[in-house]
Image (tube, rainbow, N blue to C red; front, top):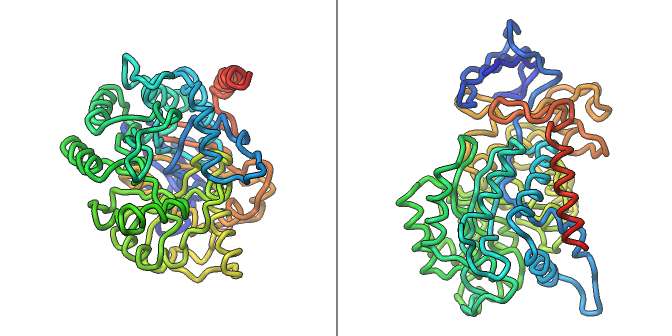
Length: 456
């Protein structure tokens, strides 16, 4: 692998000038040297920052963004949006899923995401029965990630029942149905073709969709295969979910999960919007990651995450684009903080962090938290970490005259129609150069054909 020379780079301990980045054949940084001579290294065109992991994605939803914005006499909600999603997903083939995911992953890379956790709950055929190859739709995701060049944590989703009352799945949910043993078989099949930039784990859709006994069985099977594999779950996204959990389980969702399951740092609790203070502090103490998706949570009217309590308790977080109504790492962070400003009436929340600069603090903390959630050594420019990094455009109007952490403040909070990210590297390989992905035209053409078919 080549070596790279950056005029400046954001290292864990702060900004440094004249930084030489040596990359090994496994895509890991072997040495990171400040105050170095460029020598034969490839010269990078601007300051370098860690790439952002995207910890929560439903790739197929990229093609339906904007299609569920119709209010009605009875109003609109998360639950009416979900009905629209069920209708959309009922027509997708494996080729459709690959085309949509490839388009999304190209967009993610250009927007600063260098890795993605795919929370993949689409398993079965159009009629709800398994494909001859039960891994057909997962293989479509792996192929799309390989084509785009994004690092992937693939999380097949266990989805079994239609609610906390144990009712059968509705017609629109039959493509999601699986069993603990089926998910293990799927993971074992994928291990044979997972490349070096693919990590495998498991997602439990929610406490609504997976009974406690099945959760325990699935976790035991996963531990027998890989006891360090990431575990993700949707939880406490909507007030209705909290009410149902109290009615059927006698506890709030996060309270119940912490009491019944071995939640620790391998877990990512996605959304966790509706926690009380006790739940928030107890969850933070587990070292699990809070998976926050501010643009989707706003789009669905979820509510505000308990950000200030979470951070004061030492809670870690990462960001995801979820339903992909926005595919922009900076926008997720911006709206995470804007939401708290609107909620509290304060601009700068005085919370623990590695920098007094809010944009830099958000970016660096989300990059490291996202890396933990993905089970991937990334999020930092340091030896032993993957060489996943972004080269910023120093001549971009948003970044002119900025140095140090003011660069990341401007990336996050100075919204612009044009992109200040110039180049993107994953495991030391350039995947976006001068703002362009080498496969974007072919990927976009295939995606366009799928969308026109789906909407015809």
